Length: 305
Image (cartoon, rainbow, N blue to C red; front, side):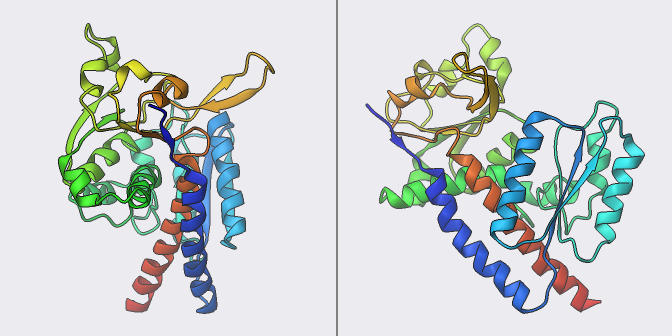
C-alpha cells in the first residue's frame, strides 16, 4: 500500500480564505484584532514558530506584536508582561511560546492570562471548558490535526460521523497543550479513544500492541521517528503532529521531521500527513482564526459593559 499524502498546505489555504474574510469584516467595523506573542529566550523551535505566525498575521492583515524577554527573565517579568497585554484594548489574542525557563512556573503564567485573550486555551477556565465539550477556543495544534483529518474525510467521500463512530483513535503523547486536547476532541467525535505516551515505547511490549489496533494514529510525542511502519496496521490513517529539528547529514543544516518515520509508515497506511506540510500550516491559520474569534468575544464583552 502506498499512502495518500494529506496536503496540509492546501487545507490551510482554504481555511485562510475564510479567516481573511472574517478579519476584513472586523476591520471594516472598526473593531480591534491583534495577536501578541510572549517569548522568553531564544529556543530554536519557538523562534521558528514565531516567525511563521508573524508571516501568517501579515498575510491576513492582522496586526502582530512580538514581546521578547531575555533568557534570564523571571516569574515576575513574565507575568507583568502578560498583565500589560491583558489590559491592552488593541490586543485580542495572547500566545505564550514554549518552552519557558526552568525557573518560571508555567501553570502560574497561564493563570495570569485573560480567559478571553487566551487563544490556546491554557488558562484553567478555558482548559476546563474544552474538557467539558463546550470550548471557548480549541487549541490550535489539536484543532488543526482534526480539521486536517475532517477535511481529508470530506475529500475522500467519507461520512465523518460514521467514520469516527466505528474507529479507534490512538493518541501518542499526553502533553497539556496538544495530547490531552486531542483526546478531548476525539471524544467529542464519539470515537473509541486510547491515550499512550513515550513510556509505552519503553515497556516490554512497546507501542505496537496499542497502535496496530488503531484506525487513526495521531502522534504528538516530540520524538523524531518514534512511530515506524511496524507500529501501524494496513490501511490506518496517520496524523503526525511532531516538529523535531534534526541535523541533515548531507548538508549539516537543521531540518524539521515528524514523530513518524514517513517512508515506512507511508508504505502501510491509507493516508499520512507529512512534516513539514501537514498539520503545521493549518495550525498557523487556526491560531489567527482564534485571534479573530477572540476579537468578536471581546467586542461583545465591551459592548455589554
